[in-house]
Figure 1 (cartoon, rainbow, N blue to C red):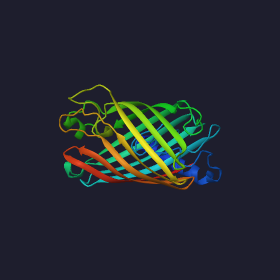
Figure 2 (cartoon, rainbow, N blue to C red; figure 1 turned 180 degrees about the vertical axis):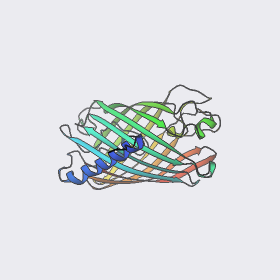
Figure 3 (tube, rainbow, N blue to C red; figure 1 turned 90 degrees about the horizontal axis):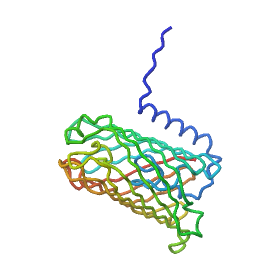
Figure 4 (cartoon, rainbow, N blue to C red; figure 1 turned 90 degrees about the vertical axis):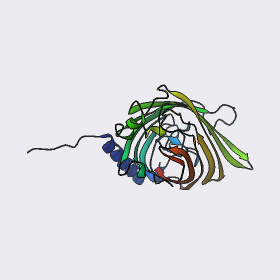
Length: 296
């Protein structure tokens, strides 16, 4: 008897991890983690725990220092220029110390390149090295984590090469600092985050990495500020600087204003107004950002 096996591609790995995370959540929701609701953030576009745009120092999942947690998410972005981005991913947090994440991007180029799309896989990891964002209220220093996000653009030889990008795979390195101030704003909890990222990604990696204007990693700042107006509702804003490596178009920074709702300890829903600036040949691209996450 002959057997045929399909290759274990990054897409298949992501799909299987998504299915596993959903199964774990469905079968273990009765013993959800012990962390304060909302303080582990949501799923960032590249898969890490944080805000929608930027990774925070917090570790994914709801697990405390003696638990393992996990989350799975799906995000949809469609700009008014009809660029279309769908993202699915998973993250696993171990003992509120280490996080491993994966994400799968599918981006359609609209009428800029009719009928064409770009697929990108992201593998990330993060380690908490200092502090606790929530429980270290008696000290000034934040929780600090260091991490990386390795990105592989499967369609590098299509649009990125034509625009002058020099590589299809690369790794972003970052350090993030997050602090929660309990009851700091009229009795409401406040979260602040600063991230410094070393990157040479063009449009997060959709248009490859590096280019004719430079091929070295560049340090770019990112910031988030959120207020928990209720125990289950957070509002805030984020800003992310991006390198400008391609002379074919000027890349601009991104920012958003968001609302994150936590109707259940195992579920979060996020909506945001997202400003992306120039994308390829289309200026002033903006979009409604929608994301759902399940976790334990």
